[in-house]
Image 1 (cartoon, rainbow, N blue to C red):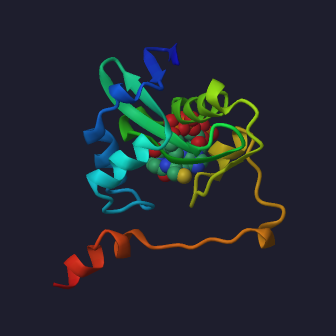
Image 2: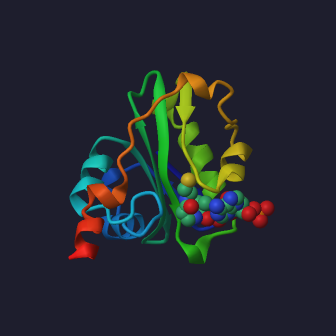
Length: 152
Ligand SMILES: CC(C)(COP(=O)(O)OP(=O)(O)OC[C@H]1O[C@@H](n2cnc3c(N)ncnc32)[C@H](O)[C@@H]1OP(=O)(O)O)[C@@H](O)C(=O)NCCC(=O)NCCS
């Protein structure tokens, strides 16, 4: 799948991803701080990925963790700072939701600290039954050894 607008492409070809850009951004993000290259590569291998490109350069990314039949978890959404505020984040999320592999999905979910409006504009609503959901969480700092490194 390849869509184009105003000199930008969104492409689902994993071979086109610039893993230096994807890993570079995620390793300094608030949700995956310190993530290793190996973990990013395995997450991409197990996901439906969209890269956002300006010419030859990758400037954004998102992926869905999905069974491609019933459920999709949307995550790792970013647009590099020089390209923000032009509607690209919305376009990327909307393109992911409309991807042919996600036709008929019953539930899309995501978590965000502060970008609620972007997702609300794309149709997401807060959970109306949060008491039904549970999670096991491991902090990136614990997982990727940042605490250990910093206290040495
Ligand atoms: C969130 C993000 C992907 C939006 O990308 P973008 O291309 O700037 O998004 P758009 O241009 O489509 O939309 C921007 C609009 O979303 C709003 N918005 C809401 N929450 C936002 C947030 N946390 N960051 C940026 N914009 C946000 C902006 O205020 C702006 O509104 P406006 O058009 O009325 O001014 C981008 O800012 C980003 O990569 N942020 C850092 C990574 C991040 O926080 N990702 C989301 C993780 S859940």
